[in-house]
Amino acid sequence: MNPVSTKLTLARYLGRLPWVIVPGIALAVAGALATNQTGKIWLYGGAAALGILSVWLIWLIPAQVRLLGWLETDDELLITKGRLWHTFTVVPYGRIQYVDVTNGPIERWLGMKTVTLNTASATSDSTVEGLPAEVADQLRERLADKARERMSGL
Image (cartoon, rainbow, N blue to C red; front, side, top):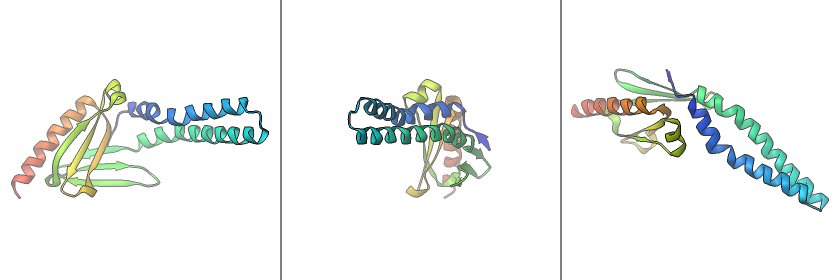
């Protein structure tokens, strides 16, 4: 399997951690300013819970990124992700209707893109996140060509 860019770890940190760390800091500050003892306990408890969640995300995100992979074969694209909830997706080229390449501001800043495969079945659409921009564009071209070849025979 071809791994995704390790920059995806930083992108996920920048996109997800602020939503946990900023409220945690706010709860800790509010706890320090609170005059009611019961209020302090609840605010510090919330801050501690968000702190634990932050540490867990700091461990989890790189582990998730290491388990993402994709591979082109002669007849299909293989996509794998996860260990506990492992997903192995096989997308036959003949089922691909169109291929999207997108990137948000963080991905663009880090030089990455996401390739999304859209198939005849809405439940089988698949994505490959965290590809270097050049690789994503080349993959889109190859997948579009292979999809056109396979669809012409139907």
